[in-house]
Length: 116
Image (cartoon, rainbow, N blue to C red; front, side, top):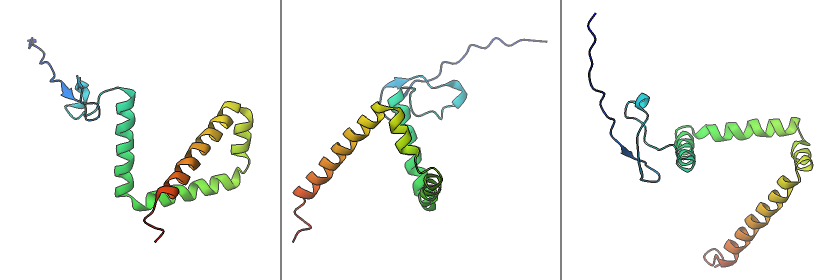
């Protein structure tokens, strides 16, 4: 049996769609990989996929919300117990809520268009 010793072709580097840095795509993706392996770029890719999925499946969000409502009705004390077990989580929740409410109040205060 004859063996062919062909030199391996070097894959072309690509620019990541998120950070724009050069990266070497995984050869198994056959040139379809568009994002590098950095955690921030992968998070961005996942968010883009979620937005695309929601655009293609408008009933999907309502369905997910309905499932969540049902689950929380069957587990009414889940969030309270979780915060009780993890005080850091409770503090973070308070801080995030405080920041969110400040942002909401600020936006209402400076929104002059809807008042007149």
